[in-house]
Image (cartoon, rainbow, N blue to C red; front, side, top):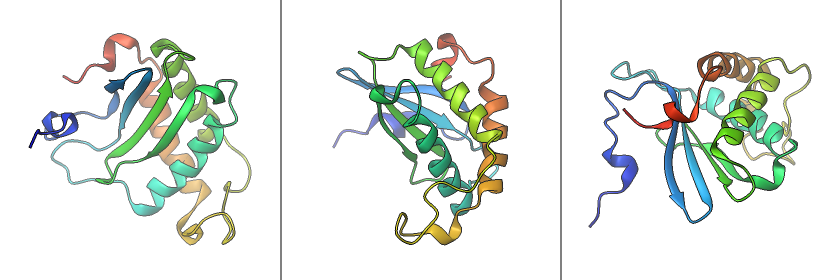
Length: 153
């Protein structure tokens, strides 16, 4: 069986950042990595879930919402995947969009989007302040990110 591409990245050396994971036709997958190598510091369930609700909401309300295919957590709890249509949004544009939405989420004033039993099957572990704190960390991390920095090192 073939070893999938994401298993070929050395997770013991991978620094937090923004990476180009793969291209499937016009769909591009960005790897938004949060975990520090060899620390065991994973994002908590509440952090993952809260960031997911904030960022997915801002992405799907952005001027580029038609290019957004998916935003969601990695099962290993080290980050998120952002999939977008490269026919509608360039790599530069996708980086700018992520910088914009993480900044919006970090500065967000209001209740957690989708925090009710009717909107979310696990709404109890959502916390807007937790999500904002993680978004501030990532906003600052990718503030000056460029296409040249998208490669796994």
